[in-house]
Length: 185
Image (cartoon, rainbow, N blue to C red; front, side, top):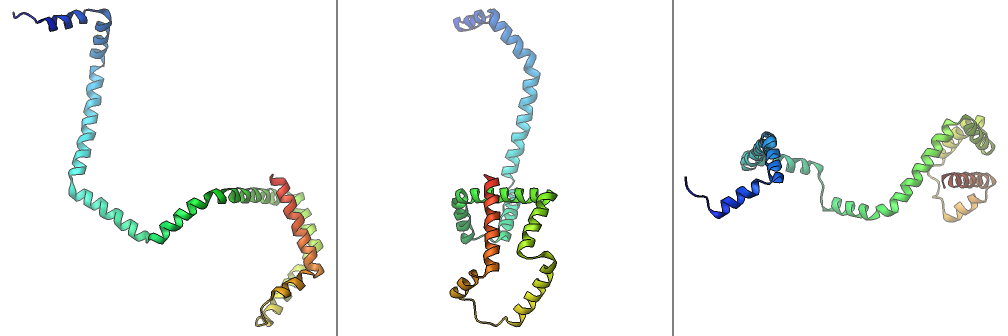
């Protein structure tokens, strides 16, 4: 038997320590699990290597991806618009949140019979609902008959704003918006 060199004897002495023996025992017990895990990794790595070396499959995947991107018809203008939208998001988020609050409020109002009846009664003060259909029908007829009238000017709008019915409606709308804002804060 050949004599063991000083390095091997040091390793054997080190292995005689209880801590080392326990570690070796643990490794021996776990060895089947380690081998199984290594085999799974080898299988997956072999699959990846095969897939990457299979030029035909890669070409098909690339061609399919390019075809799908071309179908989107996205050009530089679209990318610029997306970037602009991303830059605008900090301003849009509060607006969207406010719109969500208004939608939630509208759902609550629509679902609450008493509140809905109060709104109908308020609208009824501005335009009586029973007469509303008749008024809308007459308005449509008048509009169709006078469709080719001169365009509404800024001064025409200012004159219309003085009309008591418009004033009453705008005041009601202002009150409604005040209440919506108050409830959503």
